[in-house]
Length: 82
Image (tube, rainbow, N blue to C red; front, side, top):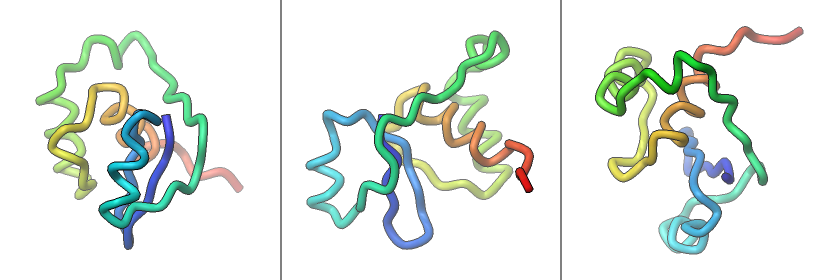
């Protein structure tokens, strides 16, 4: 998994799709991202995850996989570290 960025948007994608995203102007900013999955994550459905991301104002690719969506949700809801 690779974290990519284009403008203010970030996505976590499968590394096999990096070249396609780069062709569209995305830039890799973090390699080997391993989204942490909890038991609750496994129970979430893709529509539920997308609804939570929508509530938070987080954008995501229409073709994003469940792991990618979970990673975005975890990133958006994690506690800031000082």
